[in-house]
Amino acid sequence: MNYWLLKQEPGTYNYEMLEKDGRTVWDGVHNNLALKHIRAMKKGDRAIFYHTGDEKQAVGIVEITTNPYPNPDEDDNRYVVMDVRPARSLKRPVTLAEIKNDPKFKNWVLLRISRLSVMPVPKALWDEILKKSEK
Image 1 (cartoon, rainbow, N blue to C red):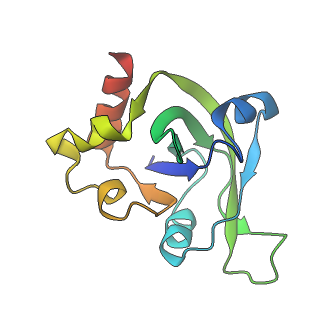
Image 2: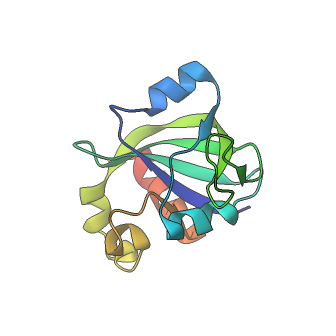
Image 3: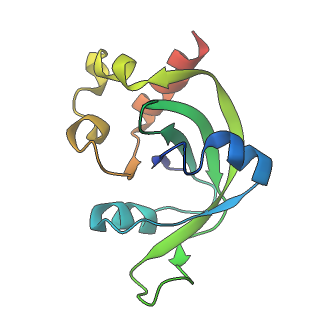
């Protein structure tokens, strides 16, 4: 299993909406590096649902429920999507400030390429975020 982070503006679509919907197609990604990450995803992988904008915090865990496939709403097959479902909300959101203040995260892509909407999460950092959410 691989671990990922998926960013979304909560005013557009947030974790509570995903819980209500039960599943969604993760679409709208056009950045080449983010698309490369989506193409590397597999059914069964897990991802952190991260609210951007004013919140800037990890709020939940989602399960990738399909392998990536071409976005049916695009004319170009390089734009891929995958389906996700909510796994669980975090007991407590983990803020970007907390992540920035922890030296374990200093080289993570979230801090180096802040506008990237889809990125891998190394297992050690995944575990650390979950640990922080329990405090």
